[in-house]
Image (spheres, rainbow, N blue to C red):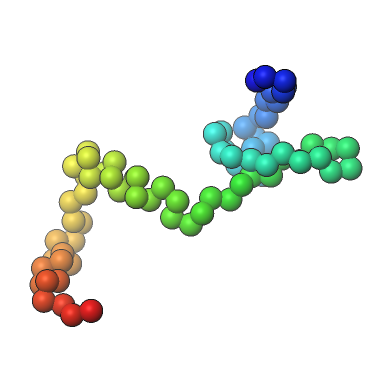
Amino acid sequence: MGNSSGLIIPKPFLAEIGADVGDDVELTVEKGRLVVTPLKKRVREGWGDDARRIAEHGDDALLWPEFGNEGDEKLTW
């Protein structure tokens, strides 16, 4: 890690602060202590990529076909 050192954080500690393995965190020093704070994800972050993956796997069929988009072309917005 270059001039830095690594720190292993047990999963239960991550869970306690609301983080998971691979999440981005902020590391600060407060009163001589290291403080690890999870960075909050933006609402709906990654939804587009998830939807694309679902479609690529063919798992994007309508669950309630009767609520499809039929007739949408006639709508005026």
